[in-house]
Amino acid sequence: GQNIDQPTEMTATEGAIVQINCTYQTSGFNGLFWYQQHAGEAPTFLSYNVLDGLEEKGRFSSFLSRSKGYSYLLLKELQMKDSASYLCAVKGGGATNKLIFGTGTLLAVQP
Amino acid sequence: DVKVTQSSRYLVKRTGEKVFLECVQDMDHENMFWYRQDPGLGLRLIYFSYDVKMKEKGDIPEGYSVSREKKERFSLILESASTNQTSMYLCASRTPLDTIYFGEGSWLTVV
Image (cartoon, rainbow over all chains, first blue to last red; front, side, top):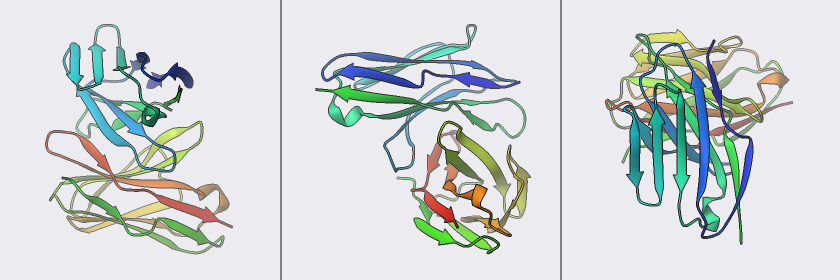
């Protein structure tokens, strides 16, 4: 079967660093995406990892280990506006390359 | 910037009505998708299309159909709306580099 696991909720303090983990088991792997979704809005693209290692983009970084079926999203210098759901999604194998989403991690940033 | 536009943000329909959700993208993308998002269940793929007049079932196609007559437009059709189809519907378009961009979402309530 196909499964993507993320923690349901996390809480962190403004200015701190938080790491959101994602583990996956999918039939085939062609990349892993992270999306941010504010309440009532559509998901917006944050990052894409296809090779092992760390991808850094400003305050956000994403890490991938394909052998472990594991990724994390690292948010630095947290701001109140970072309060949102963070969705991990894996692009599976096969001709269609469907994107399979986790249920998301709701991050609450507190003052 | 990629722009994916969903024509209706908020709809209220009666059980048994036929419902059309329209989606347009302006980047000449071949791949387009319809998802629904429900609390605790995450994003689930209903249908996708990889070219004009081509469509494939996603994970939860029952009760839905789609139409792709032009490359830029992908429509989701609920032939006979039911209350369990109350949800947020998200259209998405995929770039040649495999990044998926979402529309703003359509909140459908079936009463």
